[in-house]
Image (cartoon, rainbow, N blue to C red; front, side, top):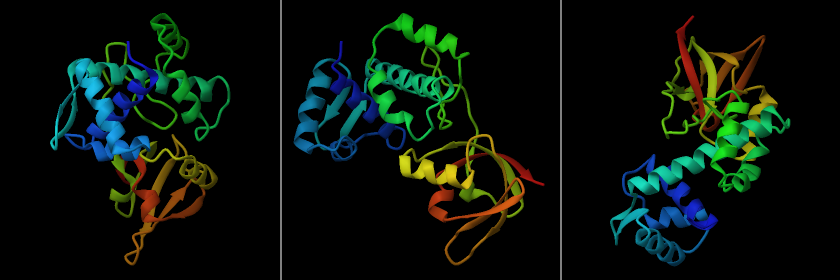
Length: 220
């Protein structure tokens, strides 16, 4: 049995490991907003429990047990986000902090019933895939909006930036999941992108475009 703090560390390491093989303690400290020395102490505890492998100066990797635990936490977090949006009418920029608390509920039966109640969703309100009870993720194919060429079109299927400010910005522009878009122009000077959304044109910065994930339809 892990403490809430230990579970948060495992989840953080899991997400960081999606970008790099060996996760450095400084990266964990930055994500957890704590001191590197505190991270090192926690990593040693997790290693003693067989949840991570840690070699000084080489970084941290999750063991199979640690990875499975982290995936289970991710599953609960994303299921609760779906519940909050679909059943309690939260907005997609409001659910993360609440789900951070709910993800630590340990009742397996509750989570299985929640999954069934929601219709076994494959993705959370931000488009992130939800693993099934066996830890398997449905295969998803998407590209970043910034990678589309002029004339390319597609459907918004997710975002890679989950801050409340970013999500509110997208909602204000009407760039939410399921919306069809087409690239009208890309500015050479700063990489900003002009897109057609329904019957209107929307201009977004390169920074915004690189965090919007698209299921591409190719050129129209």
